[in-house]
Length: 135
Image (tube, rainbow, N blue to C red; front, side):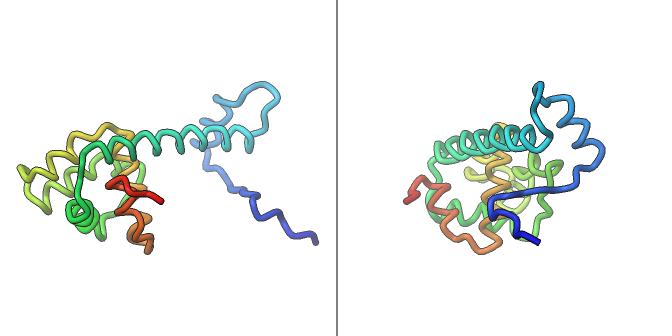
């Protein structure tokens, strides 16, 4: 049996996701192509959200405190919009950094969720991304 290409991705879609893809599929487009196209939209939103986080002007120490506040937090699509509350609970509701995080749009909050997940998987360069020092 031939090995699959390294850039090939496949998954089983639960009913709600399958319906979502079917409703957004363009004429002649496969479900896989539709999923790829929509993931590209999500990637663009994450980029916009990261720019919004950078615009907060966090220092390295502040970015680390935010990520530390999110250590152990279950991050799901449903909880990502509420991560600001976790930060506020751990730093204090009126803490200046907590107030900055609370000001993020949904795109910024999802970008924060993505950054936190990657950081806690060992990608320490996430702090540089957050403060705007990407290579």
